[in-house]
Image (cartoon, rainbow, N blue to C red; front, side, top):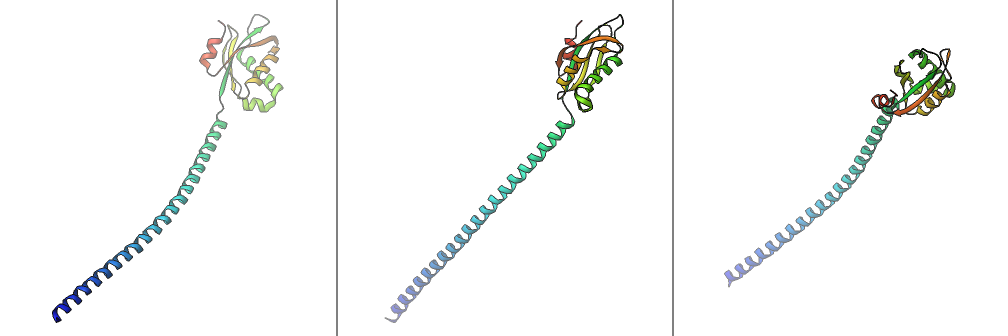
Length: 180
């Protein structure tokens, strides 16, 4: 009976040790799983915060790009070309310098020196034989220049009228609109 008793006690001890080991492994696994779960939650929180930071940084970048674009747009205004012909008194057509000077004076009288400066008004093409030309200005001051051209009654010392034919975004289109 002594060996059987010892053997059964040993089997019981091995069973207890196995269940204790199983319990410890299960408890340790549960603790590790809880730690992993809490770490995952903390990581998700950090990711959410980083997403917010990333979105804010992206929005700031976009707004700075928009500001750069607006600055470029302000610096380089879109150009408009106004084709015109001149009806004048006398035999000789007015010179290009007289035409540009008359238009610039009219724009200055109508809109002031600021309109002349912002409008960047310039005679880019003039054909004295046809008494036709093209004036360049910005899209902002196009209507001021058109109105000023209608106010011109003298070019140099001669009576003359400037008749706008067409407004265009390119010189090529404006040249097509000039009378032959």
